[in-house]
Amino acid sequence: MIITDTHTHLYSEAFDADRVEMIKRAIDANVKRFFVPAIDSTYTEAMLQLEKDFPGYIYLMMGLHPTHVKDNFKEELKHVEEQLSKRKFYAVGEIGIDLYWDKTTLDIQIEAFKHQINLAKKYKLPIVIHCRDAFDEIFEVLETEKSDDLFGIFHCFTGSIEQAHRAISYNMKLGIGGVVTFKNGKIDQFINQIDLKHIVLETDSPYLAPKPYRGKRNESSYIYKVLEKLSELYQMSEADIARITTENSKRVFGI
Image 1 (spheres, rainbow, N blue to C red):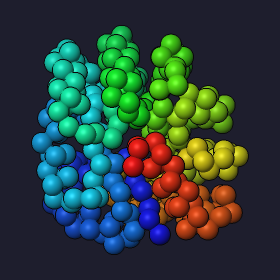
Image 2: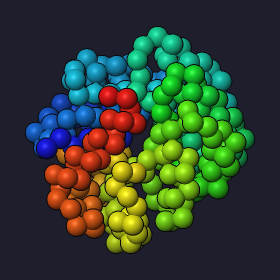
Image 3: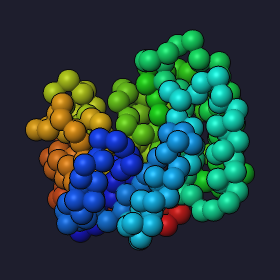
Image 4: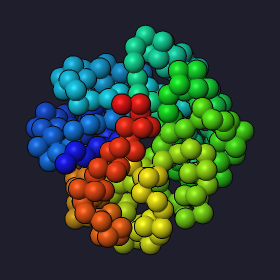
């Protein structure tokens, strides 16, 4: 059984004390592919080092995270462009809009989001969307940018069933992680009404650890708790869920 973690911040400072052991735990738990999103230029070297340290397991994205869209965002976008022109990445991400932390940067977040969508189209790559308190704003951008060559993953999907269908209508898979195990997460109430062909698994580690680890540091090996929950909700074997969601991820990322 191969499990794919489509979103994990393995370079996070939260793993500085035991990064190698943590990744090995995940590999031993059958997590064989780790898709690593970018945040900003300060993490690029650490991402490239991960790829060297774990060849064949690490798949890198490149992008500017919406919470890091600041006064210097144009310089950061140049870094994204330079990296995409130099070597292979598997997605442009994570990109999007976050209105939880700072609503004052909405205009430049939208500008950065659109710019990076167009970079994804240029390089024929998927986008990986970060959305927090911003479904309407994200959908407005996707509506203006929609095309056959726009596709990707709605990372850490936490919306309603209507928002799920709308995200899917823009050629997006839904990234499902620890929130599906939360009592107040709500997506567990309808996710089994969404065809599994639209789902990929993720942890977003070190964030959003699933039950029974909620509130603690998340890690990629904990993806098995997401797998267990989806197996229960879909009434399918964990092996089948892992196989289908891994195949979905391979199609998105062009593996």
